[in-house]
Length: 150
Image 1 (cartoon, one colour):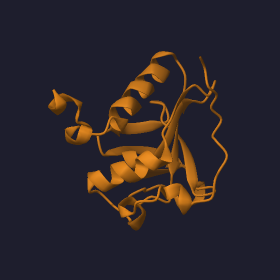
Image 2 (image 1 turned 180 degrees about the vertical axis):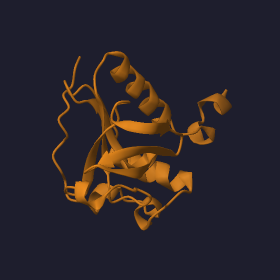
Image 3 (image 1 turned 90 degrees about the horizontal axis):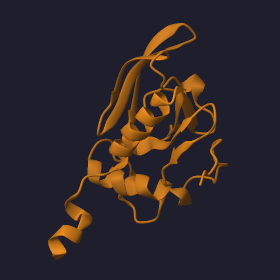
Image 4 (image 1 turned 90 degrees about the vertical axis):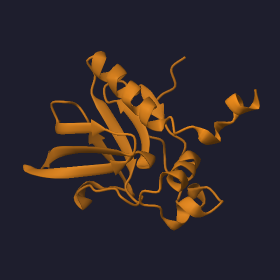
């Protein structure tokens, strides 16, 4: 019985939640936006769109091409100032996925980012291997435009 309750053998639920929330937002005719910690290793976005170490990107099908919501990386093509760019975001760098129109979606805890990055093996940085949560190294930022719906 103890074998089934042991979570160590399970993969992260973050990519599954991201895909489910993306589908839920899109199926309701809303625009999915992703909030990304641009300071994490492996994040490839144009530097001019980064503000306060974060970037918000539109993931709507009309705004991106070749969207792949993978287990380790979210990748797609997007245009910035008329120039097509390849975007790559490690799943561990996603801080929130929400609908632009009403803010409904899901935030992901920063302390989970360090734990998942330590297991993933893709682009670990020193923060991912240390015991204190990454929030100790980063200044506290205001929450994105999300609201709790009960």
